[in-house]
Picture 1 (cartoon, helix red, strand yellow):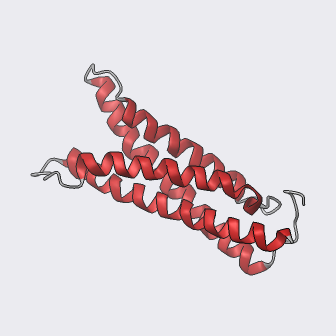
Picture 2: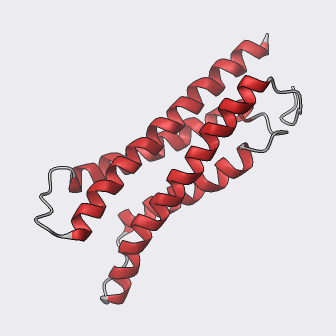
Length: 145
C-alpha cells in the first residue's frame, strides 16, 4: 500500500481538505497568539518561557503536517499515528494553558483575555487532530484487508 495515490474518493478528498485547512488555520492562529507573548517576554528582558516555546513547536509541527497532508496525492490516513501524536501534544498544550488561564479573570487585561482565547484555540486544535487520527485509523484498517 503506497502513501501516494491520486485515486481518493471525492467525499474523502473534500473532508480531508477541509479538516487539513482548519488544522493549518488554527495552528497558525496559535503561532500568532503565543508568538506575541514570546515577543513581549523577549522585549521585556525576560527569558522565553519553555511552555510557550512548546506551544509554538507543536503549532509549527501541526501547520507543516497539515500542509503536507492536504496534498491530494498524499494518503494521510496511512500516517494516522502522527495525527495521534499531534493530538496528544495538543492535549498537553490545552491542559497546560487551560490550567494557567481558564479560571483567570482578565479584569480588563487584554493579554490575559488573549491567553484565555488561545486556550480555546488549543482545544479546537486538539479535537481536529483527534478527528483526523480516528478517521485515518478507521480508513487504514478498513483498507488494510
